[in-house]
Image 1 (cartoon, rainbow over the protein chains, first blue to last red):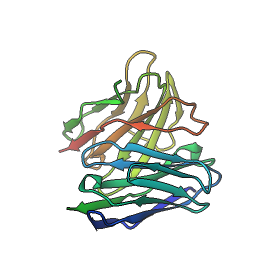
Image 2: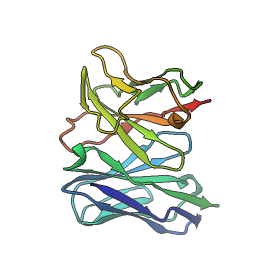
Image 3: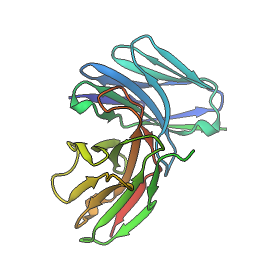
Image 4: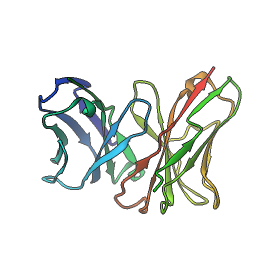
Length: 111
Length: 116
């Protein structure tokens, strides 16, 4: 069965303090790994799709990387508006190729 | 350039009543997915639909829950005889690609169901 875990569960950073979020996955035949951002009371907002190990994608202060077992979301010089829950999901060959989401990492960036 | 639309945004029902949640996918998207998010838990897949077809309902509870995506109009998630445990945020997502390929799902704002 496909599984996704994320760490840490919660992270507090000072504005400008760079860090990384981890997403570890177990999947039979990875088709894609997805990062979303979710603000309180809202739906997940798509950030990135990664397809194969070694791939990297960037958007503003965020950079996502992928290995065969995990993905990292690097946040460089975060700002308070980056505070949100970051969700990781995988789509594999099993489980009907449906998305399996991790529990998320709650990020708080303090001014 | 409207995104995925869901309504109502908030729904309050008493135990035993029916809840109907509606989802209109993004323009050009013909694949709809429903998820449930319980407090302090992750998103859980419920059902995947295309127009007039249920493709995968492996995540749907066996009783009281049903979903449809008619030829015309929005997708509907229906919960009959609601219980307190049904209280959750229900999200709809849509994608433009066939479900068997790699797809990116775009989410709506969700419907927050509260069962009294």
